[in-house]
Length: 433
Image 1 (cartoon, rainbow, N blue to C red):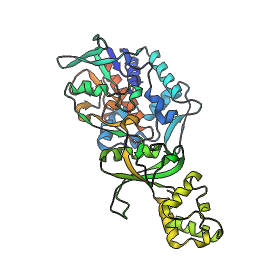
Image 2: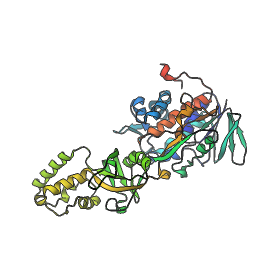
Image 3: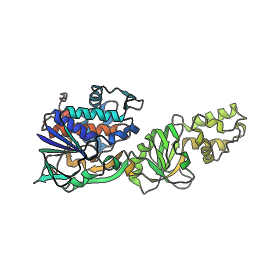
Image 4: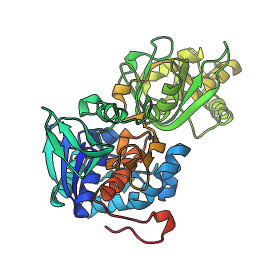
């Protein structure tokens, strides 16, 4: 069986490895100078390889339709299967309290890509980088290979399309696969940014002067803009770390709320920070009152020490309408209430954009009902298997999307090698390795 895999990202690497391991003759085509370019940005370069916990819990983090589609692939190649693959090649891993799995430093994304490339080459895959594919070759209704730059035809019994989405085009993800399959009748669901930074309007909330400031373990909420004096209905929230940038905010919490906000643009949304997510407003109020009694002569700015970066203290107090030199003994009840409200919901202002080109993942893509999840084969073009971000799948931040790529790539590669496997939901057998 001759298999061509188009795209050398997460899904393509695993698909090529699995197909070759099952006995197929495999060539992997990548238009960039090297494979795994987009993997390099995962987890800020530290490479959040997957998410921990039972695979059914990982699957449940996706939206219902996506989770339903991923049931078979996730059972076929689990997060444990992938971590065992890395660990068997000497990559030590650790799990953070939030479930995100990373290599133990100094190993990072570059090393993970090198290990995966080694696994693929050892399986016998021929990797050709710097090769631009221009389309899928079809005879009748069946895929018969790919057309490469210059019009040459590279024939194959099966084609695996793992071209990714259109986020971070500098990594080679430019939406090529969508254009190709649309020619054969595939539906492409609307594209929006997911796991992307938020660009904010300059104003009384966010300031570019905060660029580089980081918040640890905060909650970022996205809200619909409400009537004057109203905070507006909450759309989404995410807990974790935040990084201020020269255009807005980034970091896990920004990525975590970006999809829901992007989906409603241009409808206005604003974002707010809860500095103290483990404590209720009532608990913070009691804590502030106790501090004022204990420090009657200190300026109230002292209460903020250790609760936020020093560079933000003055701006937070200004947002609360409290002078920083007001002493604890003179802080009125109204001042306390405003300060507590600000600490639990500091309004950073309106979101002006969620940049698709800066996102780690794009939502939208090939309609899932047009792909068989048991084989990842197109229901429109026999012999064409689709996997990874080219599909209409976008999970939350935390390693979920890489696991979707590993799992769908594994199933696509296995099926492309003409291995017939009974769906795991109907079997108690362990999948062959």
